Image (cartoon, rainbow, N blue to C red; front, side):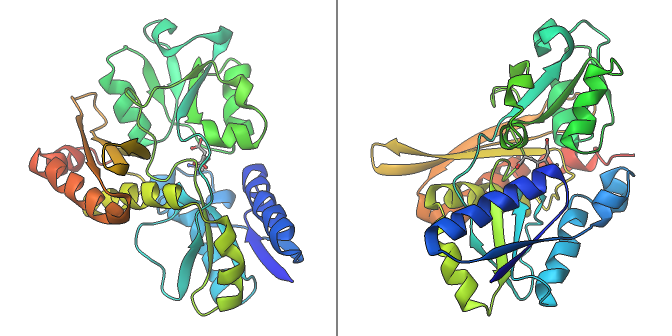
Length: 307
Ligand SMILES: NCc1[nH]cc(CCC(=O)O)c1CC(=O)O
């Protein structure tokens, strides 16, 4: 019997249920879902105020460490880049679509929104990239689960919201998006669309069961994205986007990494890309981050501390 710790939100239980099904299928093991309430779920304060998206992860990790559960499934983009003592990232399953989408009233796209339109997002990364497009839209803070956010549009409170396509796909609501945002304009959060299966580092049995779920291309991609974020010394609430892909190139598999650093004001952002070998994903992320720091990424982010 494997006890799988999960947050109680619809998205978290769907993700955890998916991992549980894969484990049952692959190994015929019993898996029980154990719901864990986190500070991020209990409070509606802005995430930057209560410690960033790490608040979703901390309580679930505690349950792992004290033995209440044997396995935790997180959204990888919510996982801090510093490794947790005593835990191991045992599997990164194949990634869902990493892109962001717009859900707007009347089927509108970003370019069709009138000046002054009110678009909801609390993510500094999304605010920075939206403002840099110079569309004259007004951005307002937004939190809550996927359903709560979508209702801000259907109720007429907001003209649009931006959120991750992966969450919508997992909840069977992807057709509610009115535009898929091209990464050329809107790079996703490092790790977006990927899941993290975490267990105790000394739990060889669970680690071995999880091995079948690991997707090497996804792991290489998110390793590069997270190494970049870590080298920029930026947390989950920094205006940083990154997306890596394994592509077939002249020398076999190549890992392409694109990244953006901005500020919240609509100032020009810094965008760069680099290519390397999938086996050197972390080095690729660090190298691209160094280049962006040389471009002034730290000053740009330094001016961007959210109020
Ligand atoms: N920040 C919250 C969060 N964490 C993970 C997802 C779902 C997408 C994913 O798995 O990356 C979301 C919602 C969103 O950003 O719209």
